[in-house]
Amino acid sequence: MDLYSPEQKHLLKIQKLQEKLKLEKKKLRDLEKKRNAEERKARSKRFIEVGAILESYFEIFGSEEAEQIGIQFGNFVKKKS
Image (cartoon, rainbow, N blue to C red; front, side, top):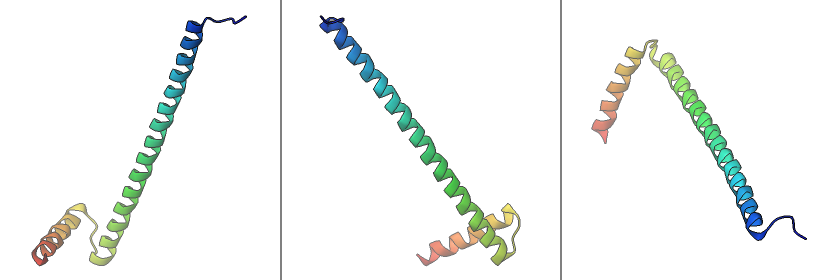
């Protein structure tokens, strides 16, 4: 003899599926957070590398000087295109 009626079995199955869905959504959120963190880390690394190159080749140490160099080269590149 079954302990649960067909309706109760159906409700239990729904509850289990809802829990499984909840866990999968959490896994997805966690993976998205990890991907975003990795993207931020890579972006920061690029900024540091570019800044180091600017410092070494142009002997600039301030953001204002770097911005001026960027503007000048940006205009130069646009004119050549």
